[in-house]
Amino acid sequence: MQLFHTLRELRAFLDSRSDQRVGFVPTMGNLHAGHCQLVTLAKSHADLVVVSIFVNPLQFGANEDFGSYPRTLESDCEKLQSVGADVVFAPAVEEIYPDFDGRDLHQQIVIQPPPLADDLCGASRPGHFAGVATVVAKLFNMVKPQVAVFGKKDYQQLMVIRALVRQLNFDIEIIAGDTVREPSGLAMSSRNGYLTAAEKSQASQLQQQLLSMKNALLGGRRDYAELCEQASLQLKQQGWQVDYVEIRRQHALTLPNAQTRDWVILAAARLGKTRLIDNCEVSM
Ligand code: PAF
Image 1 (cartoon, protein in one colour):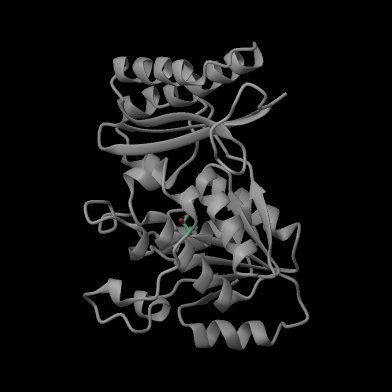
Image 2 (tube, rainbow, N blue to C red):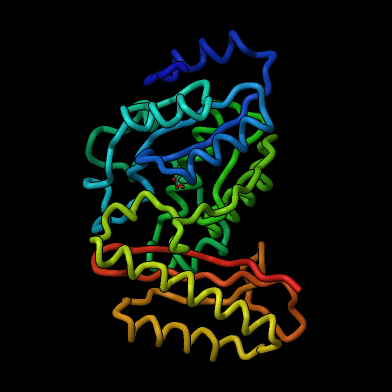
C-alpha cells in the first residue's frame, strides 16, 4: 500500500496505472469497520482503490469539533492495509486549498449545493454540505476515479453527492455502502469514540426509535408528524437533546404524502456532548 501526502505524488502514481479502474473512498480518518466495508465494496468494483484521509475544515462550523477530531493516521493505515486498499492519500490543508492563507478559508471557491442540503443536518450545521460538496469535488478532480463509495449512514450527504455528480457532470459511478452497526444496533461512527461507557450503552436507543417508526409505517400509519413527535419526545425523556426526527421520501428527501411507499426516517440527536445521526429506509 502506498501513502502519499501530496497531489504531485498521487498523480505520478495514478498516471503510471492509467489502465486501471480506480475506486475511491473519501474519509476523514479515525476509521472503523464501516469504513473498511466501504473499501471492500470499492475493491469489488475497481482494480485499484484510493482512500483519502482529510479532516476538511470547510465542513465544520465555528463551534464544532474540527480541532479535536481524532487524527489517527498510523492506525488508519494499518486497517486500510488489512482490507487491501492500494493507496492512501493524506494531504495537508494547503494541498487541498491552495490559496488558503492559514486564516480565511472563506476566500475559497465553494460549491453551493441544491436546497436538499438546507434542512435536516443542513439546518443545524449551516454551510456543512457546501464544505462537503466542495472537498468531494476537489478530491474527485485529484483522484479521477471511475467509481466512488459513500456510506448510507450519512444519507443526506449521499444525496448531496449524487446531485453534485449529476449536476456537475462528473463521470463517476456512486455506490452506496450499508451502515455497519455495533451488536447493540448503534451505527458505527468516528464520533462514537466521544461517548462515555454509560452513553455508549444508551446510544442504541436512537436506532430503536427508528425501528419502531419503521414498524408503524409498515403497519399502515401515515400520521408522519405525530410519529416523529412521539419518537422525539421519547428520546428527550431518555435524556437526548433532539435535533430532528423526520420521515421523508427516499432520494429527494421531500415530505411524504399518503401515497408514498418509499420512506427514509432520519434522526440526529445529542447524547451528552456527542451528536449522532442515523436513518432507516422503509419500502412497501
Ligand atoms: O463522510 C465523511 O467522512 C466526509 O464528509 C467526507 C465525505 C470524507 C468529506 O469530507
